[in-house]
Structures are given as structure tokens and as C-alpha cells.
Image (cartoon, rainbow, N blue to C red):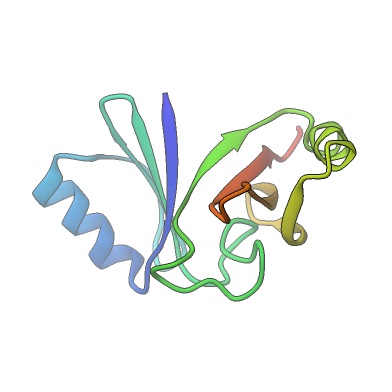
Length: 121
């Protein structure tokens, strides 16, 4: 299953758009801040700028230019350490808020991948 996060200016309007026009099912919806939508093997995470860990990762996200896919891990710190040893680049530091912790990894071409760890119980 693939996961993609989009930063959007209006969560509720975006939920309605994807649900009503593209047959996404609403899995989670925190009005005005966050939504998780499902369609086939894709989870689309929608975040308001600055909302939660994903909405804060890497600076001041806004729609366009911050789109990325997510790699969900249970051991974020270990993954970051391994990537740093391999001379990987990151955009900003770890953000910690909302549903978990996140950091933005930059690939060799400048594309962004969000590394995300859900809060531990």
C-alpha cells in the first residue's frame, strides 16, 4: 500500500473533492487540520499547513512544492542514523506533533520523502 501526503489550504473542501469526485473513502477526518483518505492501495493524507508533525516537517509547508510520499517506520531514529551514515541529506529536523514524528529526506535529485513514525502507545 502506498501513502502520499498533500498540503492543502482547506481540509474540508479537499475531503469533499476527493470523496465526491474521485471515489476516495474517508478513513480519518479532523476538520480543518487533517484527513486520511483511501482508494484502492493508496492512502492520501491531507494536512493543513502547520498542522501536526507532517504539516510542520521541513519548514513552512504550503500547497505545491511540498508534495511527497511517506515511508512509515517503527524506528525513525535508527533509520535516520543509518541514512546519515550513508551521507543522506535532510530538509530541516525532526518534527514532533500530531500523530507522530517526521523528518524530510532529500533524494539525490532533490525530491522529498517523508519518513514518519506514529506515536508509540
